[in-house]
Amino acid sequence: MIVILSFILSEQDAYSQETSIFDLLILERTGDLNNDSFADLILVKQDTLSEFKPFLLEIFFGTRSGEKKLILQTEKAIIPEFPDGKSTLLNGEGFLDILIQSKKLIISYELLRGHKEYFYKFEKNKFKLIEYNFVESDGRGKIYYENIDFNELLRRTKVFSYQEDKIITSNEFKLILDQPQYLEDLNMVPERHN
Image 1 (cartoon, rainbow, N blue to C red):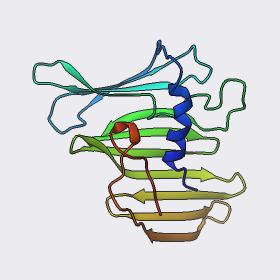
Image 2 (image 1 turned 180 degrees about the horizontal axis):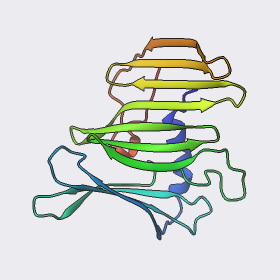
Image 3 (image 1 turned 45 degrees about the vertical axis):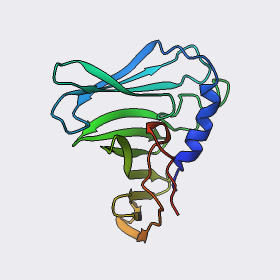
């Protein structure tokens, strides 16, 4: 099951219409995102007054002088805590973490019985989507894995039976993309796979 990022981003437009006050610092991460050996900074803040409880992602690049320069500020990179408002039931999907590993920005979500991750790399002044991972159990003996490598244009899927301790299916598909994929508010168009 692939969750299309464009759906997530289109849902976000409703939240952007309100005036937001991001009053709660959720996390702070440091690491080198742009390969210049200076510590960069990621902040995630939440608007606790909004019925959607949206998140604000801010990315600052470190400079030689030690100062931090804001290069990105967006409400669209992370799904709000309550995508349909506080009065609706949660679907089991929620923001989990952001990491900086090996010069990559990783946005992680927890699912009711699994997790998913989006990997971005800073290239040509944009954060390019380079990989997507998804793992989920059906709660009835099977685990579903999906990996999309946007550099190699490959989608790999696997179904594992933990009751039988064996791989049931394993597939690899070639993707057809007309251009590199970027997270919309990180300067380009939303993800799309064929």
